[in-house]
Amino acid sequence: MSKTSKFHQSAFAFLSVAVMAGSFTALSATAEEAKKATPPDPSVLRICASEVEKPYSMRDGNGFENKIGKVLAEAMGKRARFVWTDKPAIYLVRDQLDKNNCDVVIGLDTGDERVLTSNPYYRAPYVFVMRSDSPLDITSWDSPDILKASKIGMSQDSPAQVMLEKLGLFNSNFNYMKSLVGFKSKRNQYIRVDPQRYVDDVASGKADFAVVFSPEVARYVKDRGNALKLVVVPDNATRSDGQHLPFHFDQSIAVRKDDKQLLAEVNAALEKAKPEIESILKEEGIPLDELAKTPEGRQG
Image (cartoon, rainbow, N blue to C red; front, side, top):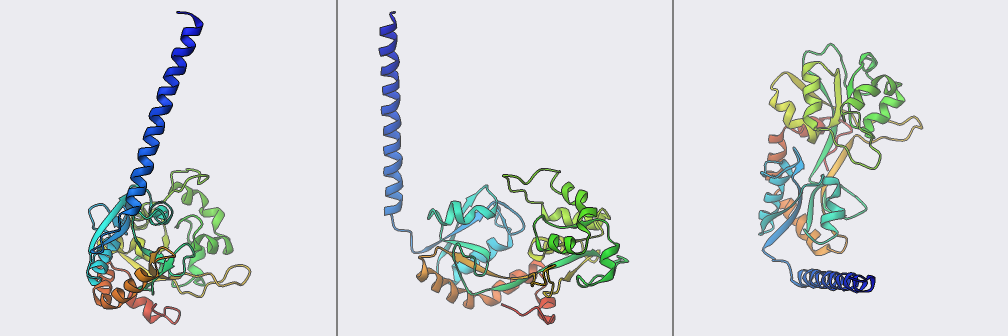
């Protein structure tokens, strides 16, 4: 076969592939347009959900935010339909909600600028996770016994890290903190520590205590019976520059910025479902009563 023949054969093959690719692209575009043109079922509440975000959200529906989603839908007179992703929950807004794959995200910080957020349905504190028989007496960041600890469980880039840096404990705790993520670099990737790891390390004595967002660990502390305790971190901490560093955060339901009608329906449903939602949160073990007792711990 001559070079000319080969050229034409290659060109034909390329053209065929290009035509097929164009056809697939056109079909995909048509399917996407059809999807957008199809109005959502008004009897269904599409809930954005991660299947890898325990204890918040799990594919078997046992996450406490999955339970809240079902209660919310019922209060709205709708059926809950979870739109699952195998990515962590930090990607729900970008990859799911903004692309109109679902309509609500459960459990975002109130005022998140990416979305419209509902009235808060609870206020969640950070907590000190400690063994009940710990010799350390820690009730706030001002407790002198904090300085006696050598291994403190915490999430990178959390308010707890800011305080350890302020107290001069970050460097001595660095190796243990990195061991929680398998010494992986956080550059260009999101690494989440399994929250049960914090609890297990405190229970076994590998860590002196941990400072974690209470919804992440309450379930696992509760499972340990009386072996561990949660101490609410007061919301009066300040950074080195004197600015307030929050440790309590209002939690809301999020909708797209142009979905004001849905937001109104969500707010009405949250009020209606308040007793059931509080029951779910208390069953989870989140210290709502303890938070309400602290001067800084206003609800909602």
